[in-house]
Length: 99
Image (cartoon, rainbow, N blue to C red; front, side, top):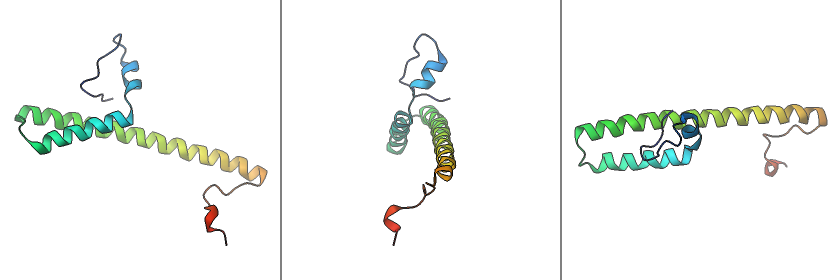
């Protein structure tokens, strides 16, 4: 998985590095790189490198979002199953919509 350029490996453990990279940190790095690309002044090699790193960060962020969405769906299904057994089955209902 992608990690921001300015993060340094700790103890050479790749697993530790990927655990430390957050969605927020990756998204901030992606915004910084987009600004650098938009501002210009980069060599072709630098711009290409930033673009490549940016695409990896986009993929990484999308994976994190997909995982979060899947976890939320699983939690809702789990609680819905418990709710059906206990009579509480309105997780998707907005309490303010009741008439």
